[in-house]
Image (cartoon, rainbow, N blue to C red; front, side, top):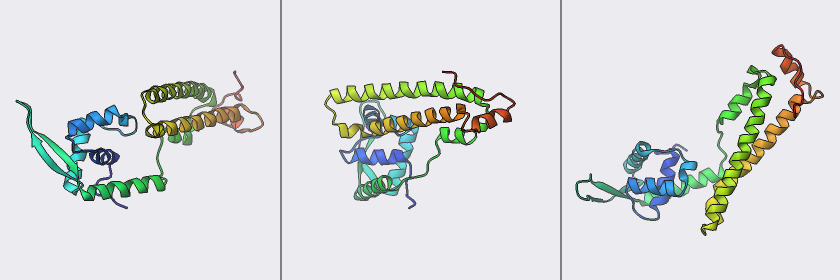
Length: 203
């Protein structure tokens, strides 16, 4: 289904405007305070652009305009009935239907033979270390946040990140093992393609 506004930042804006009308600066602060910048890429300019698109599409509307001192006018936006319907429909679609994505690591794997295994294996081992560090950081973030009384439901995206990191780590470990296993055969063929000896287990 083609949407009038397809930027996922718009979805976040609609979800927060359900709580109360806000101006873009307050939306930006709220997004950052709730950690949404970890899930949705945005900056000041992109947020204002999305707010304008939502307004044009009829999903939000000007609620009031105010000015403090010499500061520029601030327009507060509220979600419309059409915006509420769009939010619910969009969320249902995202939750129900898997979407094909293009992760950079998948692209690298599809072209991995361009590098010799003697170079790839150390890179993958360093990747494992970085994945472990990232898992530790997320575990710490979850524990700190739960300690403040935030319900676990509001950290479910971090649990999903942990699951993805665990799956990626398991894949990388298996890929390394298969590359250095002489019975698999591909490590030797891969090395020969680059004029190198068969890779060995350096642990």
